[in-house]
Length: 207
Image (cartoon, rainbow, N blue to C red; front, side):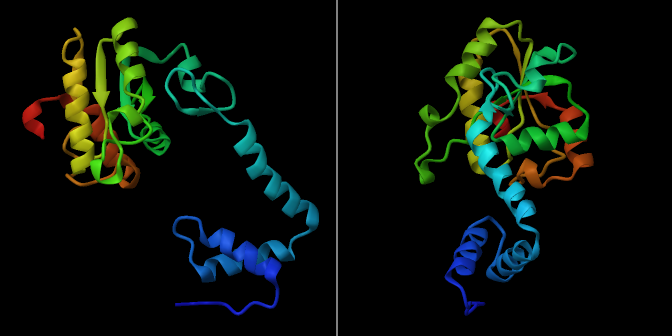
């Protein structure tokens, strides 16, 4: 394992912070740190301040839980979106992935995770109650469960199906173009776009 012997504790501290990011090893972290060190001070200050500003000022949409620069995100504020269809996803990354396909024109609901007893995550830890309220109170025709096809994702989809089945709405799921065990985040845009377009009615037997 690469363990750099660095001449500065300040540099070491930056390397440690970079290497704490997903997918960043010590070598890459050292390269990033030295690159920043070579930049003009004002560039580094702008770089650092952008993180602080994001962390302090970003909002979560009060309707769908997507990140936003205001209390209501751009998608929920867009009058051209079909509010009769709610696409339920695990995370913000999944919204970004689906939006990049340009094959969906409804709105979203970000759960903030999926049911995973092994990780201590139950239904009460997710944004499920607010989803049920939206589906029951708004003029919703369809709830589209676009969750990862892992065991945890399928378990979450089945739980949501049971919670929503008493409402007079269509419950659909992503087409099987996305293979079992796949995360939406890592599915290519063409495959994901087709799976969104060709979504199908959710059936408990799909589990």
